[in-house]
Image 1 (spheres, rainbow, N blue to C red):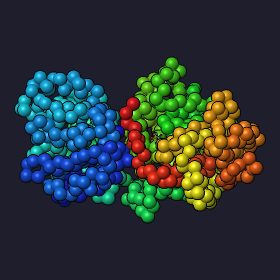
Image 2: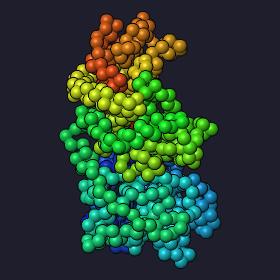
Image 3: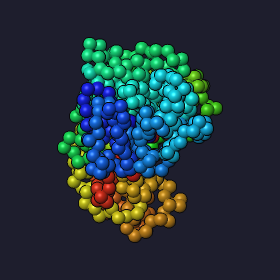
Length: 595
Ligand code: M6R
């Protein structure tokens, strides 16, 4: 779960690599490093810390050369130390590699190489790559053959960029994302498109078990700048160059202080865009749902919460039972999978390892698969039979915000289309969209003072019933991950089955209220109030039980879309009040590509 970049071209590599890797910092940020090649030697700078901190200390911009690699790390194997930061070099310093993924058999390979006198200096699994490649070259193999041999030996997941002192660059992927950016007289490789979007929107997506030899730009025919091979067969593969429609502005912070705030605000547009889908595609998905014998919705984190929310709408509107399963637990349902089963995989990134694993399990049983996903060309889009794009634009902040409301809108749309009421579904979403501006503006105004008052609290409890219950789960996740305040979401009635023991004077409890759940959830809020809890009501109308009131217009089945927005904003302000790094919370990374 790291970000990697490779650059080969005519320009000074360090400037480009630094800019590119900054764009990938959301993928991990405990250490960073850049290596460039100049005068047949690698120049390398790396250390622990976020990119700007390390750059201020080491100044990456003094690195020479027109070719290089960069890495931002979220550690898996080996602690957060300077030595463990990437890039890693071979013992003879002739090969440098950056890696995202996990080499599962690294101990076995390490012991094998150690027997040949190779000394490892880091505690990472990654060091296997440069050491093995260099060892293989010493046995007489070309760089290409040595990389290929290494890939055949390595078990696990990887996206790598490997370079040697002769300036050859080879990239490979298996289970971790990697995309090539094809420029006029330069070529990029990166974990994600925004890294090089400033320089080119022409991309080639590598698939699992593929590697590519990158050459210097060929102005006449850019398809000659790379050759892609299958790792298993070593046969050349023809790959299509695709044009990216995301713009650079979408991937930049602009005038916003944080991506999180930008992305929350973008919901003014993104929810509408999510439901602008091709009618044939809607019909195809609807038929697949209606004809399935058993439907599973799977996702992780926020995307899982969207699935939970959808299960209520499917029950109420389409009168269909859908199974909602955490992707990481999906294997336990294997006995219920058959050819007629439909698995709907929901994901912002399309790269979440637990989810990809679930889809592979589903496919192994012959199930039909549909992806609801934001990132074009992601692994999920290539695994599933059909993909519905969320059209939210790049989501850079580690916290999912706009992607959640797009997922909610799409799933609601499919519930309505499955009930033969597509137009009603659209109407409900479109009328909710009319209130998004106001909900955001009111939230930005009213939630800052509330966050400043409450940011020293140790716990938040969120309660909701029916459709508001998944919103409570998602609101709690938002608060936890960005403000590090413990928060738990409950189905309203559940609090009294134990957790109410934690309520004491001043403990905040956010009550999420829909029209149909009002009476019961207000009773639950009263129970908290009776124990001196502090009640924040998120509702279309005020009530005397509330100590603080956030008005959110009633939107019927689209209530969850509007209701989550104030919680996103509150989480943002809580983090700000605590002086935390909003876009890069500790211990997290945007795409969780390990299981
Ligand atoms: O990219 P995905 O939607 O598959 O990611 C799933 C989760 O990792 C993600 O939602 C995570 O929980 C976010 N940090 C939530 O804000």
